[in-house]
Length: 413
Image (cartoon, rainbow, N blue to C red; front, top):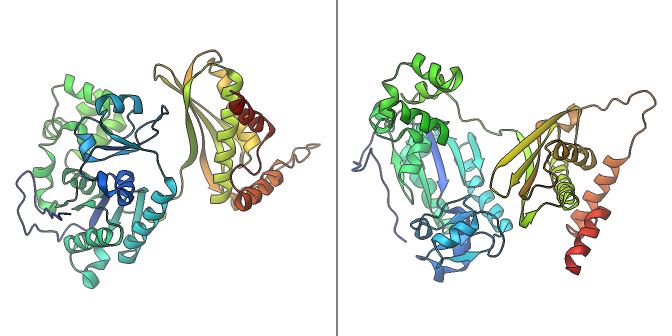
């Protein structure tokens, strides 16, 4: 496999770019899930491959660059991906393999610097300023990371090297796949201003439309607009945020060991569902998963959130903050059901539901205060016993009765 290294700026990069003021790296695996799958199916290299459910109605988890050439991208509905690229080979996901490789890649990062901020299983920010004396300048470290990942796992990654997290992430995207791009600190504006305004963090479809209506199409166009004007048109926070990014100003440090902000699970139905009993059964299944993940991570949470996506892809979210934090599935489930009922979608066809816990804190910091006359339910102890049984005997060893009935219904149909 070819190994390319790009240093410099823009479409005609030059060698020897100055990385002296560029301690921040953004490392991003190239088509991570698909690349891991191809390790066991080398005959598919160079061909369009999509990782996702072959028959289900989920979304694309990953796609090779050959598939992306047909317009396929991550998070796209699988039905649309199959239409765009009918010749693609579709591989069901193997999450265990991805987690194993991700863990190994993160170990490579941590061997270089303790300042590693993972933002997904396949990407992370690194601050390598402290590794200069031991390993060399940032571009040298970036090249070392790429070689080590490839030698150990046979997959490629792209690395952006810059003075800030924002510019490093843009740089890694610009040099994909299998590239390395250094953006010297004194050339940030030259790199940034020709880019489309959609490249800025926080510019979604609606914000982009609003900016285009103002005649703003590139980051350079945005940089010329007075911050007060942006704040008036987009709001104080968004306008100020974009005004700073347009000049490459991003003061956020690389933060190691970022705590979980939320824990959630969601499920796309095989066919649209309008039966409230089926939907509530799925809410119970998701609540069980979320609670188990929270207990494993040592978290409790106060805010329960549900996600309800209609057949027309309209998505509705509802949330409620509890009086006390919890990691008990029955509490999460009861709240999720109340939120579902309050949304008024009992007979509306849904294609996806999700449950999420937010406002997390360490379980050891939370206390449970019983009201006068209130009795302990025993649910936490019961669910902890379920955790132990599942760990020993497998995920279906212990299930709530309604989920067992649901499985029997599926078998009968």
